Length: 370
Image (cartoon, rainbow, N blue to C red; front, side, top):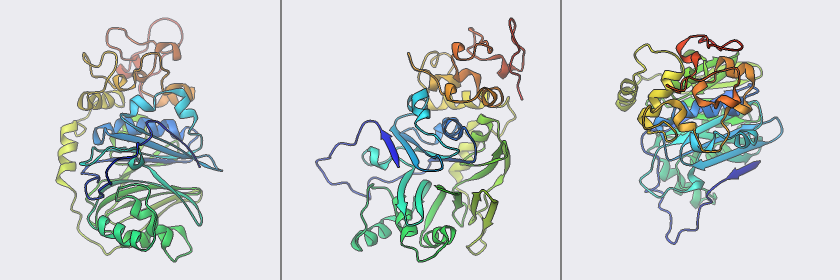
């Protein structure tokens, strides 16, 4: 696996306390399988989920031969908007994670998705939630000789899957889930599959969508809106979903239980304004820009979606994305005019004409809202 990171974690003078460095309530997860622009789409999806976590972000992709990882401290737009970063994440499948601030120290080794080489190949995983027995399981694993690379409870699932005495990966994954207690929504990636799981009570959300026939898993539907994907359904509480070349499979290994979603998720949904019908994609991203305080040119005046992706002298995410993808899914305010010569941007509002559903004046044809 190839991994590139910035701001390497310093050696601390004090010991890390696993009880102190733990995910709080909200993180965001995203995954896509079988799309040629997997990493670029994942970055856009994470940008839409930025309100769920601003401490760090990471993406892991698979190109058919090896895994590639980029994990950074800070906002998605500050770290994943440059062409060279996306080009270091080749492949048709990818997962991503945005991390909520913790009560403990902010260190790079806790940034997700976490990755491990297992007997059957590589496995990367991102986690939204809090495992109430995570510390207990961690201590037991360490006592038995496990070597931990982070101080998050998420790493526990990697070790549980690795130690499971089953042949199929899905069975090993389910065996690991059976030992967990608490709230979780997992998105994982192997060399052949995209997997997702939701806790038996459905405390943490996970939705299923499609883009060009490719399956997507995300914490919220706003991530689907950002890329123009189609919402299919919510992953049910206690459900494990698997996507591979043979299609989609659903597993329900837990006894049926009434869903008990976290009340804060409902508050977050109502506060975001997504319960009201709004113009697609760009308006969604603009709302996130205002809530997350996205930095950049014009952020103070408009708080638009492009604010989080504007960096002086830096390329945007869009050069890695094909023209057809940009035309259908890519919010034009995230792009510089010189990167899209056919897509004029209104200098007064900073929005592209696609967002207003109006053809642009002058040469060529405009992208229209879809």
